[in-house]
Image (cartoon, rainbow, N blue to C red; front, side, top):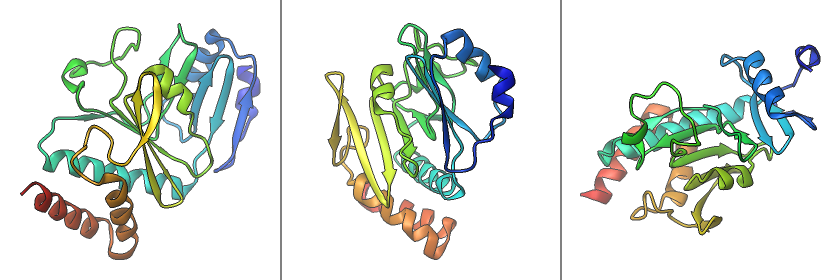
Length: 213
């Protein structure tokens, strides 16, 4: 399978599905692909998806990720961002690489750790997915127990909160329950295309200060 994998070229915005992939094969494929790659993977009970994001996808990921970081910094909340780290659980036969993820409530529990094991470590508190190619796999995040999944698609931000093992759409979520995040984040992401990233982030920080002032 690894020989075949080397021959596969996934154009940006496209995906490849491999069926009947064992956990051992999944682990070997991850090792073969390595960390320095643009492709993202998702593994669910033997089905492996490999997707290469579009440039627009990456631009949205970076800007929205920066807005979330600015929000946490202005609120003086300690956090750790792990980007597109591979999160997996062998017992569940599931694995996923979010576009961006954050440890917030559980930051202190994984602080300083070089490797994470979801059989003992908590999952990220917040995962971000940019849905330009319908890649998001809510069922995997749900099974792994990620408390909030943010999905950005067609200029809209959908906040999904895990309640009783199922995701429910929420206007504000629980991490930033006092702020209208679902409306404001897309506004400043759009502003970054008009006035530039730095100017948009500065304006966003000013907005946060007004809300908490």
